[in-house]
Image 1 (cartoon, rainbow, N blue to C red):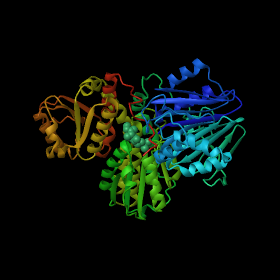
Image 2 (cartoon, protein in one colour):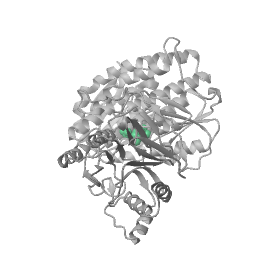
Image 3 (cartoon, helix red, strand yellow):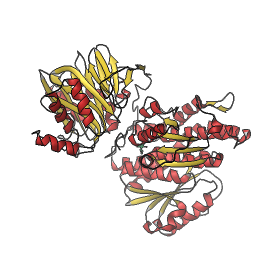
Image 4 (cartoon, rainbow, N blue to C red):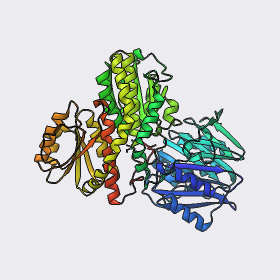
Length: 606
Ligand code: F6R
């Protein structure tokens, strides 16, 4: 993963690099570093931990310079430490890297034989020595072409040179990289978000390209050094001022924003005047689509699992769901009439991007459901359906999950109407229900008080289980994932009906178990399964929807009721208390909720 930034200017750059690194911390936050050139030297400051720490060190030594590169790290090769933090430098060359150099071990052996000494355990350091070595016999441009050809794997690179004190090299294979244009200065960044405070004029490097940035000039080249032309995009400035406001953590704000983000998304897709779902720019005939393949990772994958139930329920199509990291290496029989849908908040997830790339190479129909519309996945797919939920900063995905489900539901409903597998009346009713969703989500947020007190029990448990059937099964998976990543407690999501085939053995006296059983077609069966775990000592938190009907089960530990809406839309509401549960569990333990250990927001490595 990791985040990269670089600036070449006639003005001081240090504090601006630090500012951009703070924006990039969602990509990695185990260590950070910066290198500038001043007084004819490369000056490097690095530290383990956050950018705030780096900033203190930088201020202490009054680091200055009009050119520099910076990095936030998510460790791949070598543990998080100051020595392994980037940049990695020789006397003349300094490098920041996002990605993995797969042949670094072989390259390291060759370079060691030539006498180069390695300080860190990283794969990145081979690039420093390779560049230094090639520069002995080649000019700068040829050096870059030759070095990039030597590297296997994925990378985004920023490189500066002591004897070229206004020049930065940027290079991209796999990992994304953007170039920004300013007044008499240029910027390099892992994404446009990092550069937004400095410019809204951006270009993206294509896969395999590199660029030479000077303060007054930028040139782009393909992997053979042939000059390429670049479009300059004007980005919107509306996401620039996204702050925590009165919230302690972005995650809390993002959970609470969900009624608004649902409304915004619905406003983009539903024409209320004509009671119509609009999927703009759909490039194919909807009736030609005969199957859908849904692909994503983590939470995005869970949204695909929920959508499978919707597509099966409402269309006649074959539906399959794949985890992107598995899909990309399977022997897929690609189908021309299938729609391959890639779901990703960031639009930069390496596995999802690689799965999309595989589909593009096989010339099948691709659709991206993303939050970041300037992302690599959005730029490559045939059709882009944004989820319109604004920046999501907390590492654990919340409002994006609801946004992903929402766009999948809108697409499914539109396809089923156009393919005539649902009637006009059903279509109209579904739209009516969708228009109620934001209000129901808002009211469901009121379950907060009750959940606040339950967090402790989950935070201090040895482990817990999340059970559900039908639509509620993927929601159980999502609830368990949230608890794991935020409170560092083992949690397992399971289909409620599967418990008797093994996992029931895990249940012991006092174990907290969440049962998601809204009053849908699976309700009675799930309640029976709930009874089975209660009989074996589990403390059950039941998530259901409001009803005057009594629940035929005894000894339920706690119960939370979400609002009522059509059964198909209940997953949106049952998710909310689970997000809160994970949040309060982590809060109870005093963890950094927006930046859980070992994780990063944008997963740009395999
Ligand atoms: C969990 C979480 C991750 C992401 C996954 C995919 O809370 O956020 O599981 O969902 O890394 O990320 P995107 O959606 O950016 O492709």
